[in-house]
Image (cartoon, rainbow over all chains, first blue to last red; front, side):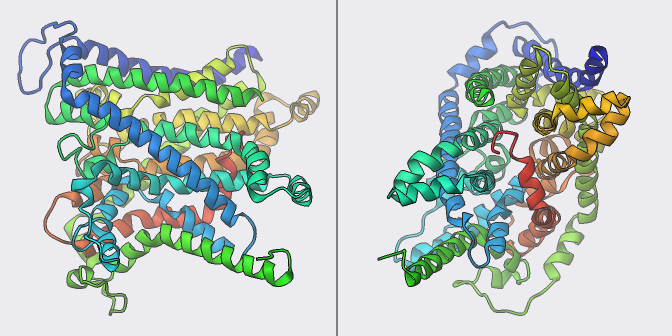
Length: 285
Length: 278
C-alpha cells in the first residue's frame, strides 16, 4: 500500500519539482552572467553585478512599495467590504438569487477585459462614466490613470476580487449557528456585539482562506498594469512583476531581469512563510 | 425606530433589499455598460450624456470577427483551458488521494511546498520558460500553454481535492477493503461518487482561471495559439475612441465563461471552501 501511495503521488510531485527547479536553476545561472539580447557574443560571468544594478535602480524601491500597497489595500478592501456585503445578502429578500449572480460576475471577467473596460469606459477623463458622475456633482473629473495610477489599478483589481471574497463569506455565514445568534439577541446583545463576538470569530477561517488565495494571485498582478498604465507615469504603478518584465522584454536584459526574478522569489518566500504560519494554525484547529 | 414590530420588520426588510440591490447593480454596472455599449454605434457610445435608448446594431460584432479571427482565438481558449484542466485533474486526484488516505509525517510538508510553488510569481519563471519554449520550437503553440496552465493550477487542484477527500470518513474505505475491493475499484466505486462534487468544483475553478489567464498567453503566444485574453490585449493600443468594437470583442471574450460561471455558481462555492470554511 505504501509504495502504491508513493506511485500515485509521484507525477504531481515530480512535475511540480521540475516546474520549480528548472526555471530556478536557469534563473540563477542567467543572473550571474552578462546576457543582453541586443548584445550578441560571450556571456561573461559578472558575479553580483546584475543584482547590484537591479537593487540600485531607483525603480526597485518604488516597485516594492507599490507591490505591497497593491497587495495590502486590495486584501483590506475585499475582506472588509466582502464581509459587509455577505452579511447584507445573507438573509432572504426578494431577488436574492439574482443579486448573488450579479455580485459574483466580476470574478469571471478576464484581467485584460477588466483593465480595458475600466481604462476606457469608466475612467476616461472626458467620456468615462466616472467623469459623468463627477460632473453631476459639480466636480472636476479626475484623470484617473495619469493622476492616481496606482489607485486606479487597486480599484480594478479589487473589483475583480471582491466577488471572490463575498462568495467565500456567504458560504461561511450559511454554516453559522442560528440558535446561538438568537440567544445572544434575546440576552440583549447589540448588532455590533453579535458581530464582534459571534460572527467575526466564525469567519476567522474563511478570512484566512481569502487572504491566502488573494496573496498568491495579487503578488504577481500583471495584465491590469500592462494593458492600462504600462507601469507609469514614471514608475508610479510599477510593481515587482512588471519591473522584471520591463527589464527582460523591453530592456532585453535577461541578466538583470533574472536577478530581479530572484528577488521576486525571495519576496514570495517571505510571504509564503507568513502564510504557512497563518494557514497552518488554522489547519490544526 | 422599533424594528421588532411587524411594520418595523417590513421596513427593515425593504431597506435591506434596496441596499442589497443597489450594491449588486453598482458592482455589475461596468459589465452592463459594456454590454449596452457593444450594441451602439461609435458615435452613440461616447455621447455625453450617455444614451440608454437607441436602435441596437450588430455591426460591432461582425467587425470584431473581420478584424481578427475571433473564432480561432475562442477555439484556442476552449482547448487550452479544457485540456489543461482535465490533465491537471488526472495528475492531482491520485496525489490528493494518496495524501488524504495514506498520510505520512511528510504529507503536510509536501502540501505546503506545493502551495509555495504557486507563490512564485510567474514573471520569475518567464525568461527560462520563454527560452525553453523557443529552443524546443514550442513558442506560440497550444501545447506549451496547456502545460503551463496545468502546472500553475496543479497546486490549487491538489489542495482542493485533498480537503475534499479528507472529508470522506476512513471507515467507509475500510469497509470496502474488508469486502475485498481493489485499490482501483475502491477509487472508482467509493471515492469518486463521494468526492464528485469536490472534483467538479475544483475543475470548474481551474477552468475559469485558465480561461482568464493573461500573463502566459500574452508572453508565449501570438497569432497562432493566442487565447481570447491575448486577443483583447491587442485592443489596448490607442487608435482613437473605439468603445463599441472594444465592447463587442470583450463581451465575446467573457460571455462563455461568465454564463458558465452563473450556472455552476452553486457547485463552485462548495469547492472554494478549501476544507476550511465549513
